[in-house]
Image 1 (cartoon, helix red, strand yellow):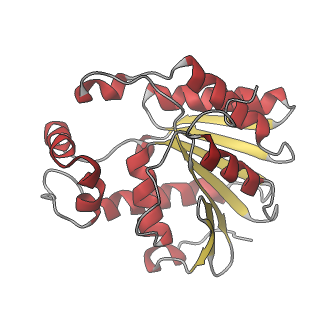
Image 2 (cartoon, rainbow, N blue to C red; image 1 turned 60 degrees about the vertical axis):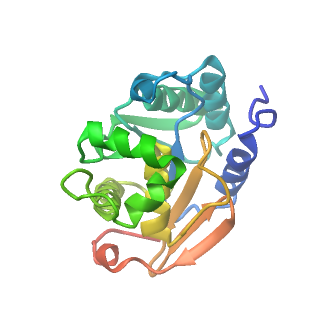
Length: 238
């Protein structure tokens, strides 16, 4: 099976997987990725129900099978079915190579944006690719869509709680959505923009060091200081 080397969106995914084989095994580590390839609904309002395609299932399985099998993987996913499917097939791929997994299942923060669903869809349809820029910039009323930084903080705090019980040689895998990953990259890593949209199964790897965060993503490695609202959360790092 060599799906990721053949699909148009596969190169960033393979780059990410190559980083996974270069990591310090003594550091707490998470992998945050978008779900795999899904069906394309004719109406935007139907996108929440869009399932994976068979290609998407096979690609997620391949992703799991390529992850190094000398680690234990704790797997979480958004409440949307295509993320659950992606996580399930990654789990199967890891196990196909005799790897170890702990399947935790749904994590609501990986999906939930506190908002009026009707207004959210209205703004996405109106602003298209500029929606994420406008959201991060605070251009939408907070009573209609929560500030993007609030989502970033909520997810960071919940992931930190998950890290508390993780052994150093364990990797947390989080399957979420493109908007979420762009928000995390901005508020966690200070990445203002990416060269292209977050493709299927693309995302980033994050390692928690004593005084810094190490990000691995499509543009390479980035070492940054902890955001002030995150650095004081007590948990074991490297």
